[in-house]
Amino acid sequence: ILENLKEAPKDPILSLSAACKLDSNPNKVDLGIGVYRDEQGITPVMEAIKLAEARLLEAQTTKAYVGLAGNEAFNQSMIELMLGDNSSKSRAVGVQTPGASGALRMLADVIKASAPDATVWLSDLSYANHAPIMQTAGLTVRYFPYFDRNTKLVQTDAMMASLKEAGPNDVVLLHGCCHNPTGADLSFDGWQTITEMAVQQGFLPFIDMAYQGFGDGMEADAKGFRYLAERVESYVLTGSCSKNFGLYRERTGIAVIAAKTLAQSNRIKTRILEAARSSYTMPPDHGAELVNIILNDETLKVNWLNEVEQMRLRVDHLRNRLATVLREKSGHSHYDFIAQHKGMFSVLGISPLEAQTLSEKYSIYLVGSGRINIAGMQENHIDYIAESLLSL
Ligand code: PLP
Ligand code: TYF
Image 1 (cartoon, rainbow, N blue to C red):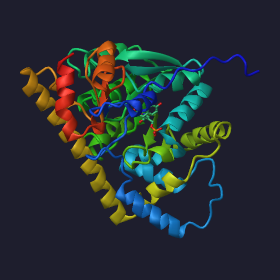
Image 2: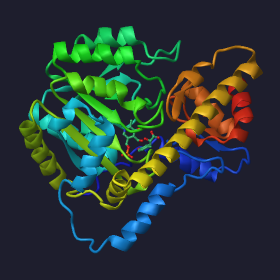
Image 3: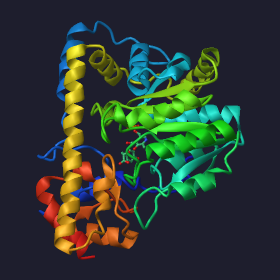
Image 4: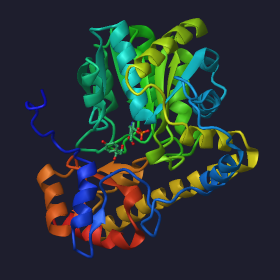
């Protein structure tokens, strides 16, 4: 029974780190996988997490199972963090999942169960795992124009024109902030337009929030999504603690459902628990309890917010430096858009072949879409990256 399988293609992003590790070029730079690194090239355990871990070690008395929805105090705290005092909070319920990845899949399963013929619209481009997750859940995927290859910003008019076709049997997946891979975010005007369209056309907004705090700040990053959440009848939302709590490997995330009424949200929640039970059953607790400890302790929360802000400012600084150095070295403003992008990534608008040349000739590893992880750079890489890029 196991004879028929051919080898699966490698994960295109994870395999970049492996290739970079094997590269003996002393100038090598890993701008592939989306993890934050400090000026020493390390992805540190955050201070607030270390303190919460010390408390947890002291206070935890059992490792017995928690339950299908995971840590409910975590779920409530994450809803607070993402929604603030949004009016939709009164009908929002959460389920802890193994990362936002788990949440994407659980929500896709529930959408499939409720509307087997639903189409999920993804931005062109979108997160590498969005289409595989939606398609494996049995949903049809369509793309709307998003990234303008000329301006390297969002082509809002073309996006909205295309989404005119989305109706009550459609799901529109939007990145809450810090778009992966492009770095090009919807403007607040864009959020207002899409909100109006969701209300009028009746499609389900599906918001994926993996980088809250990395764009303009913890509250500012939620502004567009919260505007939408106030006004649409129903939406679903995923949250990730991988980046803003640095909990990557602890697989800490949440699926949030805000249906018409709290009773309906709770009914849908039972279907998510059913979907979880028939796959991983229960999410890991460690990361969720750490987040819960931090978000419910005033001092730890302030420490944590400061740490995220430091990371955000560092990435912002690297962005601006790279754009400046590219302008100085080239004498033109072609790469100025890098400074306008938000979050960890930028798509540079180079071809897959040029991306391959950067990897093979210069040992600068980046995703084939031309995405670089700004948060993976060190200040002393910038000249080399700029010179290599301009030599293409
Ligand atoms: N969604 C987006 C847009 C992402 O970039 C990522 C990964 O970083 C995820 C979801 C999944 O994150 P995780 O499963 O680590 O929480
Ligand atoms: O886009 C990224 O780099 C992150 C990390 O299969 C990631 O989201 C990459 C590949 C993958 C899972 C996560």
